[in-house]
Amino acid sequence: MQELILSPGPAKLTPTLDPTHQMELILSASPAELTLDPTCQPELPLDSTCQPKMTFSPSAAELTLDLEHQPEETLAPSLAELTLEPVHRRPELLDACADLINDEWPRSRASRLHSLGQSSDAFPLCLMLLSPNPTPEAAPIVVGHARLSRVLNQPQSLLVETVVVARALRGRGFGRRLMEGLEVFARARGFRKLHLTTHDQLHFYTHLGYQLGEPVQGLVFTSRQLPATLLNFFPMVLSPRLPWKAPNLTVQAAPRGSKGPPLPPPPPLPECLTTSPPAPSGLPPKSLLETQYQNMRGCPIFWMEKDI
Image (cartoon, rainbow, N blue to C red; front, top):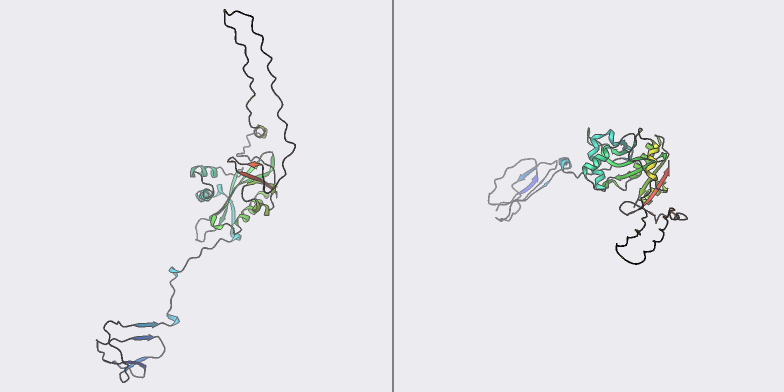
């Protein structure tokens, strides 16, 4: 058995090692130079099953970091960098905007793209909340969306619909930023009031200054060639009622050849009611917990409005 000791010294000695011996080397990158001293040899047990064990202790300067394997952190866009742009001025973002809306309200892609394609400066108008893409020369990221329509008989009002923010960014102030941007956009074009409906975001809009209001009718389209008098006709048409029909009380002719006195004349027909039933004395009081309005699916909704 051969014994070896690693110790620093002025001379470099190269001993002759027996290949049957196993040894343990501890390498340490220190300023001193290590040499082998054959005069002082530690006892090393001979074990054929053991393999040489090497322990490396590199200095701090030798440590390198692989940036490709570092965890990626997704940062939310800054509120100050957000912009509000009409969708018809950014046609390259139509698909991304349709995906954002369909993630909240599923609908056929063709129908959604057709609806977004109707956006124009003459209203209805679809606005997108955009964030700059971190990748240079890449398209912006669609963060939110809202649709604005004119209100019938209220030239200074707009109806806000289809308000949505990306799911991953909710609860970070982007909804408030979107609604504040709508107010600035509408006010710059001469409008002074916004209307909207909500089902489950009542307190959110209340914190933004909205109050319970009355229903309004948004115009799906606007055309200068269509007179306003014709548009005024549509909301005045009430839900049609089936006309009252008098029962058939015509006298059946007596069969020929029958004997006996003739039948008496029928009684006079009742007069048709021309007056509608009286309207309720007053509307129920407004409450943030109850509403008398429902959407087409029978879901309760709250009409809200805000002066801007």
